Length: 134
Image 1 (cartoon, rainbow, N blue to C red):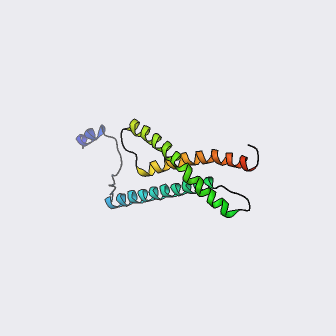
Image 2: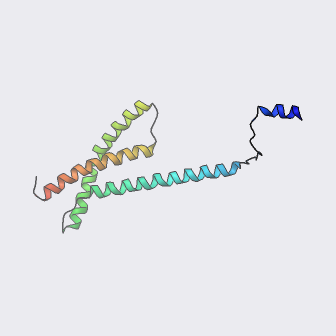
């Protein structure tokens, strides 16, 4: 009895030990669910960027709906090469810094962000032109 007490003196009493059983399939499902949620969030944010870009690129002429549609299409097609060139420059620099290829979704996001910024500036210019301020 004394031997048993001496051998246990150095050890701390932790109480009864309970084994926690982990189910490998549960972790796999959780990771799969998290990946699915992340993909959904990415797609939703990409859709929001596309909608904001389309709204920013609209050229509105009051009372002339067909003229607005035609001018919007002409504008989008004429500004797209500028956006594409700026995006390619940014992506090329980032790929040189990171030393790996960026995924297409990231490149598309850069394109949309550059396009939204440019459309904001061009939209302000169009607004001031229509109202005679410039």
